[in-house]
Length: 455
Image (cartoon, rainbow, N blue to C red):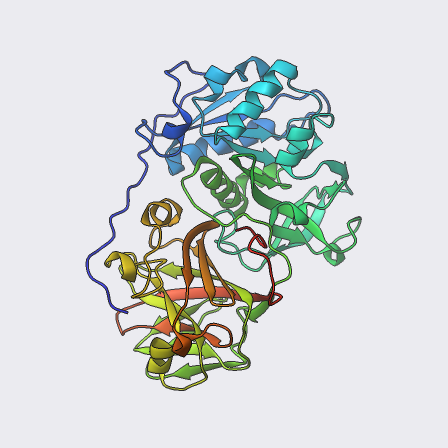
């Protein structure tokens, strides 16, 4: 539906690049989460008590360069004495850059645990998984511990999440050379896997075909991102790996939002290659591009999944606006080639952050506003990807934006029953360009509990 006005988004100002652990007034967790402060700050920690990677200086230099680009100050240290409550409060994220062995004592560990619980960010690079084996909190934060590795060699990385800032710019298959870690456990049930290795593309993988290599999670109040890449000096000169690392840092410091809840059991409705099962209702269309996205044009119409309806389900999809654009996701409507049937018999979850509360992004259009404070904190700006989860259970409809629940609505109109219906995406008008990709669904038991997949 059409909206008015234009969204104004704040952009975090850049900061001067400094070296070392610099003394400056500590900031509160509330300031870290978006209060007044002069730019973002990242601490790179690269102490080693075991094997030492000769790529560490290249990694530090790369993060410094990324800070200049990304508008955050970078300090670097190998002094574990930096891990005090007062000093850690200065930082939005700490990058463990190929640390190895036991690098923090009990007091320093306690300080870092408190920092994470107050909303701090963690970025683990490569041998960060070969660190602090006897510290359970750190093992949970990193997501998995190192087990072994074969020789350095090329491999295919399968990108599973193409909305997260660490992977949104990558193709579905990423070919690169590195030292590929095997891990003692699979993080998939605990963390959100962003990319995994195709073990058939190289020799020596031991994780039986499910081999995560990059993931993210929220952990005990903080944000965590880990990438298994970064063994070689050459890694930190690769443009794609640098973008991958920058995206992970941006997530950890809170400059970009993403859904980092574990995701299992979904099947694709649109995987980027084919629109089999979908049908266009009304004017306009969607254009399929080589990168696996579909973009709206013309209108007002709707592309709907005609192959089947759904009754109890979690629908996830990634979407991106080019600017002040308009679209929506429709659920719970009967089969029809008239797009107005969905308007009159179903519900639209709006994509357009420039209208009145009950008609803005995250709203059940015309019926219930999103929680605007949560929506504004979770929303990425035009040009960046966002992820919706729309969960329907009985007559209850809930909406998550980048992992944050922003709407909870219960239908009471028999004509709009959500218990059996189709799903679709809107092409609103000739000037509106909204892109979608990775549309997937998980069908839920009719008696699924409120707490399933995170309430």
